[in-house]
Image (cartoon, rainbow, N blue to C red; front, side):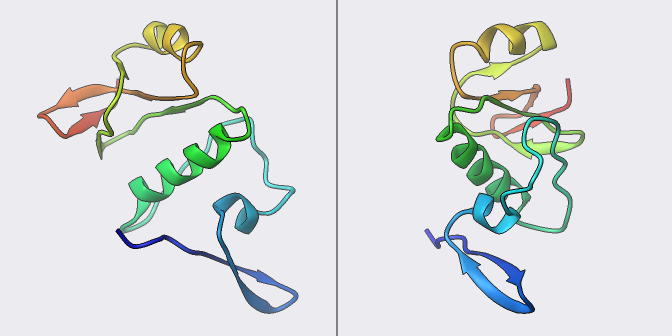
Length: 106
């Protein structure tokens, strides 16, 4: 599997970062809602960011407004279930299954 690299601009120079949080910078507002948009790489970036945040002790709920690849693990099928499950783990997917590999919005 290829390793995802993050690039950001610092003092008009492009710098490569090993962590997305490094590229986003120290002033990046963590603690609210993050939207990821674009054409490709969204799911990989979302799970990488979730892993990085979890390593800092943050709890993350991942969901979608369309369809998204489902990673292995528990899936919260309601907001109430998400509230209960997020107390037991640091990263949680919330949504309704669509086939065997994807989820859609609650």
